[in-house]
Amino acid sequence: MKDKYDATKYERPSVTVDVLLFTVEDNELKVLLVKRDEAPFEDSWALPGGFVKMNESLDEAADRELSEETGVRNLYLEQLYTFGNPNRDPRTRVITITYMALTAKSEWKLKSSGDVKEAKFFSVGKLPKLAFDHTEIIKYGLQRLRNKLGYTNIVLGLLPGSFTLTELQRVYEIILKTKIDKRNFRKKILSTGLIVASGKKLEGIAHRPAMLYSFKNKKVVITD
Image 1: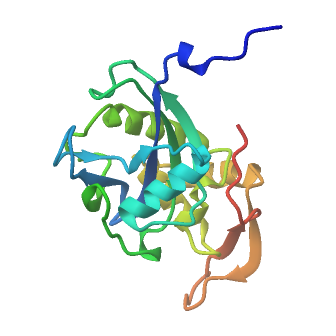
Image 2 (image 1 turned 180 degrees about the vertical axis):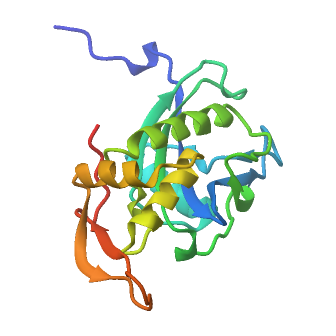
C-alpha cells in the first residue's frame, strides 16, 4: 500500500491577492491605493489586497479585499500576473496573484475599513513610495494595459454606452500618454471590429455632428 499523502512534509508559502484599479480623471490615468494601518509598512501606500482564505477562490478573495478596503465592488477583474520573489514580503514567503480592472470613478464612493486608514486615487505619473513590490506591479500592469488597447475593449468601463471617436481617442491618448494621429487612429480602431456605429449622431451640434459608436460586446473581452 502506498503511503498516504503527508502535507506537513512540504513548506506552505502564504498566498495573497492585489488589485490594480485604474480610472481616468482630470485627463490623467490614476490607480487606486490604500494607506496601510498595520506593520509592515504601516502608514505606507499600497495596492488594495490581502491574504486568501482557505475556503475562497482567488477571484472571490480579490473581490472581497477590494470591497472591504475601498468600498468598490462588483467589477470585472482580470487576473494579471503572479509575483513570487522570495523576499517581496518581510513577514514570510508570500506569493501574490494580481488583478486588473478599468472603470469610471464616478460610479462609487470610496471608503476605507479593516486594516487600511484611507483609500485614494493617485496619478500613475505621481505615485508615492509604495509598500512591498507594488511599484513593480503597477509598472507591469501599465505595460499590459497599454498593450491591450489595440485588440480588446478593456476601456469599456471608462466610456458611456455611446461615444464619439474623438472621445475614444482621448482615452487612448491619456492611457498611452502620447498624441495620436486622428486619421490613423480611426482607421486602426475601426479595423479591429471592437466598435460599431450606432446610426445616431451627437445632439446639440450645429455643424456636422459626430457619429456615435458603441462597443460591439458590452462585457470586457480579453483576447490574449
